[in-house]
Length: 393
Image (cartoon, rainbow, N blue to C red; front, side, top):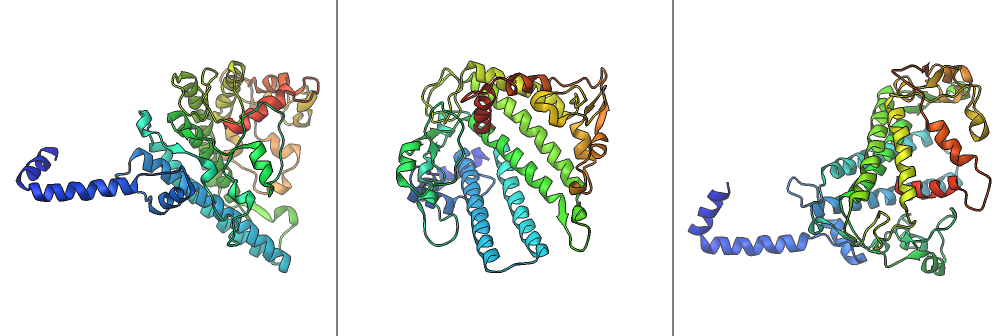
């Protein structure tokens, strides 16, 4: 094909010249730019999925689709809340509307996830420069952009402080004080894995929700029932892939040697916008957690939930008899038909399996216990690692 094109250009120099000018102009116009609000709007308007997308276009496609999904969900929630205040719609009508929104979210997440699976950033030139604070959208669909909407995608300032949760603010000073409004990131392959793991987890959650449906005219604890068992099995597959991707991401970050506008950074990288610092101990804890989670979620180990459990895990005790452990794949393969009627020991005990050499006991209990039961303090070890894991995956 390249040889034929070469002969064509030799025999038609004028046509080749005109074509080259047109093609170079098109490429320049389509170059993704996510560094300011106007360029972000142009990029998201023009980027389309195709078989000939550049690596940067693939990344822009995912970001623009995800931002549009946030806007869609926010608008749905805001408009739905207003309609509920104006009247009292039937529960069945609300359930149908929520299901339609969840179906839309699942489909959009799937498209983004499938694109992320294809992306391979092999050099710095493939990385996309991002300035998230400039991604401005009217998220609630009221025709105006509030201060909270203007800064929704901004990155919190990097600091090692206790975990705090607060709703979006409409105070401009708050964002100038608490956020890094000039944060810039040059994406690399570990950032793709970071985003991909989040997409696996989000899609799994939506699949679980869509596996169940609401119906009127039955007992309250049977109003929500398992309508699509295959959805739970898909959710399990996505969950496994998400956790495996998280471990691949951890290893990829540790292997990095450059230090160029990083997002998720290892302890040797200082040029990063990641909101919380991660030291060597954090990466070790992350790795230990993955070593427990991956075999547990895949069914290679089972989680003891027996009589002898104590401390912060006591609430989970007495689910499985001694000598047995909870099987995660069993839960997804045979999910409760009526979850609201499944809040008893007998229902959950059916997911217990014998602990043996083929399915040994998971060490996750001891791992969690070692952090959760330390003396209370302003920022305990458990909360410290939770804060990091919320950002990591």
